[in-house]
Length: 400
Image (cartoon, rainbow, N blue to C red; front, side):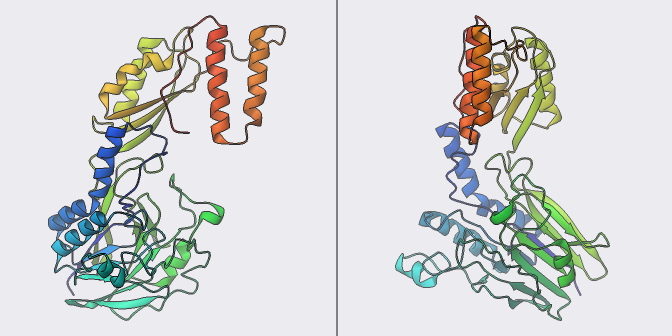
């Protein structure tokens, strides 16, 4: 048998609005980034032309919502059509679900005058497991299922698992929540959908599992350390839950060796969420430390960075003012000043400053949500500056 080369990707979320994600993007840069999110199909096509896969696996959430513009669907169809004759398999997730009236519904496409899915594309449209053959490879099968609505699923899709076909290369596609996943987008409680464990995935016995739903790259290993499957993660960093480099995944399966997993760059930018301890530094030293942190994190002029400064700088040093020059080093920089006043910890109710500080500290402790806490924190910091005789300067506009 010839080795099998797979190209895997998921969670494109084309059509994302990119608002309210904690990065305070300007409208101009937000529009640029939307275009880059929506260009995921073309970037996948470029990756496929580079590695020449036998099969492309896309386990869900290709678009962000069913009300996406038809132009985005046309881009998907054009990219997949250009991949032919390479077969493409799609297992719809909870965002691009396969219910009636959506882009997976041929009647809906015809009513809108949109093109049908290309002949090389195979879409799973049932909530039950199905197994399909791969054109041109009698030794390969693909088993998958679909979400039929955006509702979260509490059932365990691998308990019991689908029957493993007898094909030498039996592939599984699953959109769901891996228990124990540690990424910044990790769901909790009721937000988990179609949950499964590493043990359930390994016990299903498939040659490879292409996983979707989580937005960080992660390989899921069997007890012997071999790779049972992987999340490719989202190919474009849209917010603080999608930090670091973004990937497409190339998988090489050989009956004589464990699966070989390689990553291909999928985004020319990355989102970085960095924290700097001011450590008593004055302005110049604080700038040097921040610059060193950017270098250590591998920040490039194309990247989007949130830099949070904590601790207590030297007296009279304001982090937001001292680090403003860093904005020219990256495409977009959000500075969060979380430093403490040098007078913090000495609140005395016999003074106006002390009464103010104690009152705001009480409001901060009682704040019911993140927005209320941030408002109280800003009032505390700006008020203390004013009471210390310094001109209070509001921070840049931020999403809360």
